[in-house]
Structure formats: structure tokens, C-alpha cells
Image: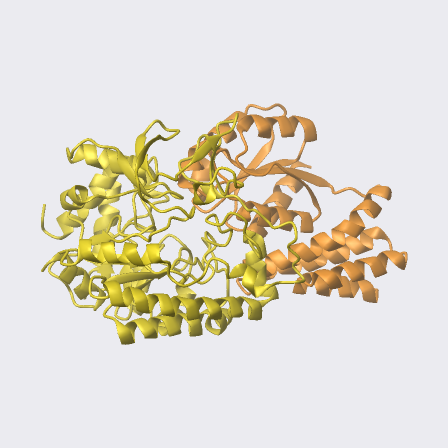
Amino acid sequence: MTPKQRIRAAIDHQEPDKLPIDFGSSGITGIHCSVVEKLRDHYKLEKRPVKICEPYQMLGEVEGDLLDAMRIDAQAIFSHGTIFGFPNENWKPWTAPWGQELLVAERFNTTTDNAGNIYIYPEGDTDAPASGRMPKTSYFFDSIERIDPDFDEDELKLEDNLEEFGPMSQEEEAHWTEQAEKWRGCERAITAPLSGTCLGDIALVPAPFLKKPKGVRGVADWYMLSADEPEFLASIFDRQVEIALENMAKVAKIAGDVIDVVVVCGTDFGTQTSLFCGVPQMRDIWLPRYKQINEWIHQNTNWRTFKHSCGAIEPLVETFIDCGFDILNPVQCSADGMAPEGLKAKYGDRITFWGGGVNTQQTLPFGTPEEVRKEVLSRCEIFAPGGGFVFNSIHNVQARTPVENVIAMIDAVHEFNGDK
Amino acid sequence: MNESLNQLTTAIKAGKRKDARAATAAALEAGLPPQSVLDALTEGMNDVGVRFKANTIFVPEVLVAARAMQKSMDLLEPVLIASGIEPEFSIVIGTVEGDLHDIGKNLVMMMLKGANFKVIDLGVNVSAEAFANAVAEHKPDLVALSALLTTTMPAMESIVCDLSRIEPPIKIIVGGAPITPDFADQIGADGYSADAASAVELAQKLCANAQ
């Protein structure tokens, strides 16, 4: 089987010849740039600065030579714009606070204050208020909430929270065309993000890509909307879906034959122990809109649809299946109610688990290589039978993760596959 | 119980900020003892905590309840101060250095306020030195540390280590997504809780034991 066939078989619940692996095909299945560099060193690949493919979480691009070395089955197409509103193009050098020499986009413009905090700007415009901050001792950016001084929670305006959604630009169309040409015929499965289909992703709510966001842009304010103004939230999503469907049709026309998997939505519905919304509200607000997106995709393309949600979301998995999602990620087995055996037994023949391979909060960063190996082998034994499993860690491999543990993880999957 | 106090408790439980403010104003205008208004508010938040812990309500409902509580406190706090009524216990809280995430920390803070703790919030990205200075200045009964990122767990460990040298000793509780009871034990914290409602119970227990 080719890597593409392997992943497609797994998603369609047929047991592939080998368990497929993903690292780096999306902003939620990636590797921190510092670890990418160490992996390149480990595999003795050409020494060159790692490119930042996702500047918010500082994910490093897993380039073809590293994909080959790790025997990865998925390939990313990233969106034209980054979360900070500038395109990933025209690379320039940048030194990270931890000393790593990186390549970043031309408009990845930063300033540093006296305390060593690094600020990044929407569209790279340093005259606009900064929209992201990386503390001196951190390895990631986080959004700065910029609340419009005229914002009035009693006078919500739909258009304020729709500013970022609109028809695909000419630049985006050109990007899709270029990417489709580049990857048509690729042996790996192609994963691509869709634009505007994230319904309420909290990372996008503060709009770090906009210079002057209006409307509900505070994280807590957004969560309160679902308790206070569910109809308003539903109206935002309705308009979002309407726009997204038009844009999806364009993507399908340009790159429909190239793409295998589309990342539809990264909204997190779970905390470590509970949910951000109950099942009735999920079915009332999210289900009909997700269903509309998934049905369009399944009727008009051969793509498979990918839903990301961290946390203790077991009570929502049945609803995700009813929404028409093919794939669930990152399968946070350490959260309450998310034990792998139970998930596989209850849902394993109806949704594909893309993730769940190893705990990135405990085992991978803090365990020994042998502990990593054992956990990975155990997860493979549980999730792989009958297909419906693509190996990935539970969310991105974090900064400061020992490279020996990442190698132990990859080697354990190859061991499971009988390739070691 | 007086009608306006009932209304206050109901408004907090339902997260109705305008009703909470109106009921508080009515209670204070009627000359009700400020302690009774505070008790009605605490009763509402206590109910929110119980339902949150039982997974019958979720983060958004807790946030709207806390916002309603704050609208009530805006009116009530000056009256409490004027009457010499102060919270029995105080706590210094913050997200550890290198970490900018505060939704969990803020939930704990709101629930603690709802349980009538005095809360000194140091915000996010807080260094060991800033925690130590706040302890020296405010002499709290407890310090609470939060972390969301795996990469800031070592910062939590080093802050706990630094604070453990303070005399007289100060009790420290920890929490956040990647934190486990084992990790809390390992770094020498005095307690761990998995959610905001449990954090309040833990804080109450540690403060009561210290008396």
C-alpha cells in the first residue's frame, strides 16, 4: 500500500498493511520547532534552519526528508494565511529566545520589551497593537485580548463577529492552485485545513489576525455567549457555514482530487475533567451546522472530515458521529472517561481515532524511552485492529520533550508494524 | 428569607447579572444586614459549585454566575467594608512564569470569591519573586499556582521550591490541565485539585486545619 492508500483504508475502517503515522500534517498534529531540529540531527539530515509553519504554537515544518526518515504517511497543505494574518512566504532568519536559529515568514515581525517578552503583530504591522505575546521563558505565543472600547455586551452586532469570514481572496485561490499542482500525485495522504468551518474555536476568537477586532473577542466573554445568547452564537455559525460552503466549492474545484482529509474544526469542547457545553446544547447549536458541512463534503468530494477536540469529550463522541465526522483527534486518553479500550469498543467501528498514541502531558515529555515504548505499543494494540486508527501523539509534540522519547515513540510504531 | 435575598440567590444560580444587581440594591436599600446579603450570594455560588462538580453545568454557566456575583459585589463590597466585615481567609493566586493561560485560574478565583475568600490575583506569567513579594505584603493563608502548559510545569516546581523556604511556612495548592496529584506531591505542594469547585473545598479544608 502507498501511504495514501494506507491512511484512506484506516479511515474507512479497513485494516491497512501497516499502521499509518502522521506528524506534521496539521497545526494540531505537529512538532515544536525545537524538537524538529533535534529530530533532523538524530536522522543525520541536512543541517538547515527549521521553518515555522505555524507561528502561534511555533510548530516546525516536517519537511520531506524528515517525513521519509520517520516513515510518515501524511503530508500537509497549510492555509495561505497564518493565525497572525500574514502569509507564510518569503522566509527570513529569526533567533528564538531559546537560542534556536529559525526561518520565519517575511512578516513575522516582533518586538521585545524590557522584561524579555516578545510581541507579534497582526499582518506583521508593528504600528498596530500587538496581537500575540511570548513570555521570555516560554516557547509559544498566546493571544492578547484586544477588546473594542465601544463594545457593549447588551448591544451585540452579528457583523462584528463575522469580519474575518468572507469569500476566498485571489491570493488564497492562487495558493490553492499552487499547492494542488505541487502535491498532485503525492504518495502521501494530503491533509488540508478548511477556511471558516471552525465553529467557535477559542484560539481564533481573539482574532490575532485582525488589526482592530470588534465584537465578542474575550475568551471568557465568548464562553458566556453560549450560556447567555445561544441564538446569537447560532446566527454567527449559520453565516459562517454559508460563506464556508461557497469557499469549499472553490477548493474542491481547484484541489478536490488532491486532498484526502480536511481539518474541519478545532473547537475544544472538553476540559481535563468535563465539558464546555452539555450534550443537549451541542446537538442544538453545533450538530446541525457541522452536519451541513460534512454532508456537503461527502456529497461533493472524496474527502474525509477531521474534528479536533481536546479534553474529556466521551459524552460528545456519539454526537460527533451523528454530525458526520469521519475522524476524531487528538483522543485525549488521560482525560476523564477517555480510556482507550472503552473508546475503541464503543465507537471504534464508526469513527477513526487520529491521535491517542501517547500522552504529551506526562509520558512523552517526562517518562523514560521505555515507558514511552510501552505506552505506544499498548495504544497500538488497542486502537489498530480493524483499522480506524492513524498514529499521532495526543496533540502536538511539545517543546522540551526529550528527542530520545520522540524517537522511542516512532520506533515503537515501527516495531508494532514489524519494521524494526 | 427576605424576598430580595431569595431573588439574589436565584439570580446568581441562573447567572442573571442584571437581576443580581437589582436584588442586591433592593436588599441594601431595605436595610438588610450586609452579612445576610453576602450569605445569599455565597449560597448561590455554592450551588453553582455543586452543580459544576456534578457535571450538570459547565464552564459557561459558572462564568455567567461569577459575573452576576461580581455585579452584586460591586454594590455590596463598599457596604461590607464600611461595616467592618472582612473575609476570614485570604489567598494569593496566579499562573506561573512562562504561562499566559488564565481561564482555569480565573474560575478558581471566582469560586473562591463566591465562598467569601479574599483573593489577591497576581495574573499570569508570575515569577517566584512576585509570589514571594505578595506573600510578604498580604500575609495570605494560602497560595494557589496554576499552569496549563507542559513546558511550564518545571516553573511551578521551582516556584513551590522557592516559596517553601518562606518563614512562617505558607501552604501552597496547585492545579491546571497537565498537573496530577502525583506531580503535586513530587514538587512538595500541600494540595492539588482537579477543578474549581474542588479547589474551594481544598482551600477551606487547609485553612480550617491551620486554625
